[in-house]
Amino acid sequence: MDKASDFSDKLRYQFRQLDGIYQRIVIDTASGISSAVFSQLVQTDEILLVTIPEPSAIADAYAIVKIMTYFYPKHPISLIVNMANSEAEAKETFEKFNLITQKFLQRSLKLAGFLLFDEKVRQSTKTQTPYVLSNSNSPFGKNLQQIADKIFTASSTASDLWEERIN
Image 1 (tube, one colour):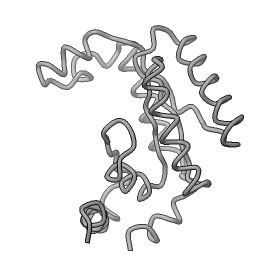
Image 2: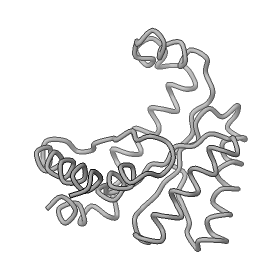
Image 3: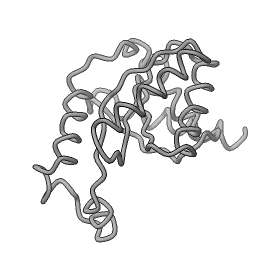
């Protein structure tokens, strides 16, 4: 058994243990597309793909959408634009990205939300303190809450596939 397959089996087992305990599980994967990342993505109800308004990050995000579309064309994918300088930049990034996926992959994405750049996020990472505990009313904190509300209130179109994926 190769490492990717072994990892996938272990992950599937762990998901089975959590089934019914949690409403949603958020998995933060590495950037780019590797066999380990791919094996995690295919076991989800929905992919929340995070990118930033920079060409290399957008290229990585596009690669993930392209591979997922090839192997799993109906797997729901939504985009979160992180570190945007403004709401307008976030929406423009999404619109351009979505136009590219529609044109070349015949795939439309949803905008799950956006997060405005905030230097305090970087500081909280360095100090290992949760950002939202002291900044929940900041623009970033409010955007994060909007995304969380959307994730936890939306019913996934692929939820019926969850049981099939973990068994």
